[in-house]
Length: 307
Image 1 (cartoon, rainbow, N blue to C red):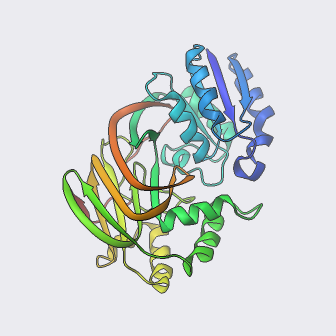
Image 2 (image 1 turned 30 degrees about the horizontal axis):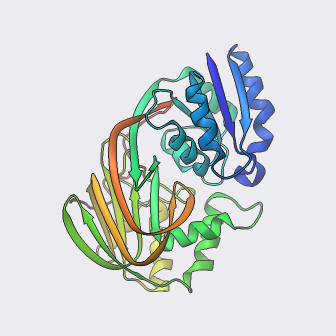
């Protein structure tokens, strides 16, 4: 078996770079023909992944965070080559969603010994994603996380960024159409997800599954900075659905979102700006190796409406 490893040396504030010898040594135990390539610039992982598919590799493994996974997914979308994911980034939300261990060496064992399962592939405008998109306050927070403090990762990094963003953020007016049904909001954030967590473990859509063919949508409506301080501890545990007057959940397959002003948004941890968002779902459209898919533990918490 030919294995391509795509390693982002900047992921996890340099954590991933230290894994190179361990990854190669562990794969050598299985007798696989493996080649590790480090990313050199933003978007490089897309190119590496495309070439790996074209060159006939049987398996691609990422060693990085959610942003690296996103790029590799965009390079591999449409192929039947499976992806393995090692936890080596700041948040590792997708790795956690598919049951990957925090220890990358144990992760290699799980990928090699595990089965290939097909999860939903999502599309936003001209790009693919596999985990989550958060727009508005969430996008601004993700932007600040990516410019964050060295040695601070995961949930602490996210919480520090929340505090930094909290008192400067402005609400946005947005039109949202979910499977043909239109709504309008003046809101703090909009999350459109395929998995239940983002931001290093915040359970923003606790009922989400990556293999049900549906987006989960969370809208946090007009709130004050002090409301956010109340909302966040509940969201970490996936219990913010109790705030029925401020939070709404929906499910859908086709979503259109339009803002009157440009929104910062994060797509699997990568941050951009946009005013128009078109989402579509490709059920079971992407193969993942070593995934352990279990029902969401918090499915009963969120009150979810079909669009």
